Image (cartoon, rainbow, N blue to C red; front, side, top):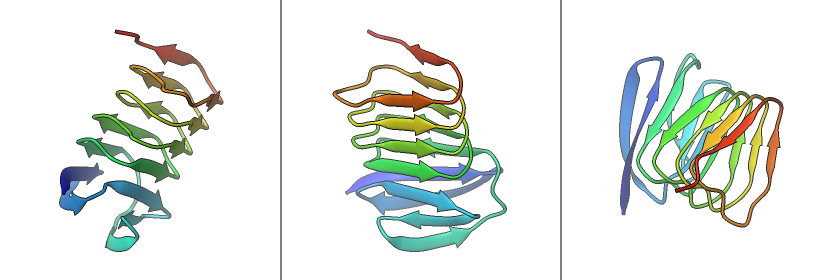
Length: 110
C-alpha cells in the first residue's frame, strides 16, 4: 500500500491506499472512503497518488499516476494522465495526457 499525507489549511491526515484523492466542498475522500471534513483552502498532497480531484488549488509533492482535476491552480511532479485546472499548471512531465488550464502552463522537463 502507498502512504500519503494530505494537508488542508495546516491540518494533516496520513492514509494508506491507492491514493485516489477527492476533495470537494470540504469533504476529503481517499479511495472512495470519506476520511475527514475540512474548511477547504490550501491543499497539499505528499507522496505519489493515483488521481486527484479538488475543488480548489492543489499541490502534489510527488507523482500522479492518473488525472488531476483542480478548481484552481495545480503544482505537481510527473503526471501520467490529463490535467484540468481552473488556474495555472506547473508540473515536471506529462505522460500521454492533455492539459486544459485557465492560466499559464509550465512544464519542467528533466
